[in-house]
Image (tube, rainbow, N blue to C red; front, side, top):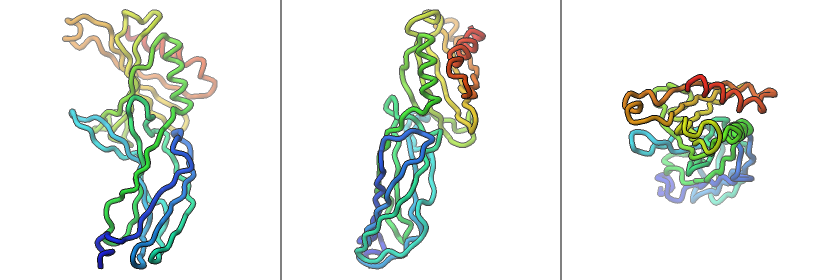
Length: 243
């Protein structure tokens, strides 16, 4: 009887081959199941890749990806079972820079199951396109300042998620020192390209700031084919048009 309310029920543990991953890649894992006090029917084993984002001065949990991991089966009382799986890390998974956290929760879909308590933190490394962005900004004299997940509740930037990751850069050397306060860049990866939404904050005086004329938005599209060396040039051109 107690197993029917989650006490003495089967347990699940996701064991990743590596908790340091790159977005867009596939990571191998073992799903380890330990049977409870009685035989139980497992409808499926499911997972969710989660993060947090800022919205209205609060922190909310955002879903990067979720779905079934293993189809249904019967787990006998006390049985120990290991199942090999492969987990795709979506290209839009936030990079764990600037205090951004990403984790996986895994659970068993069984009758009266308790909430999933298998929690695995991920270290998500920049993919090639994000590294290209960081290198382009450095080439233009900007330094990386922070990375934050922010709300996009109305789908202004993406219809897939209700949040985006924003990278902030400040001019350190070069022609933009004294011209710009910072750049805020949101990468929006697609199958064959990345669109960078760029908010340009000018180093303006108080009157310009009050008028809202110190900020402007533009986009830079990166096809990724022999364009690595031109990305800094494309950003510079987009910025200069707004100055």
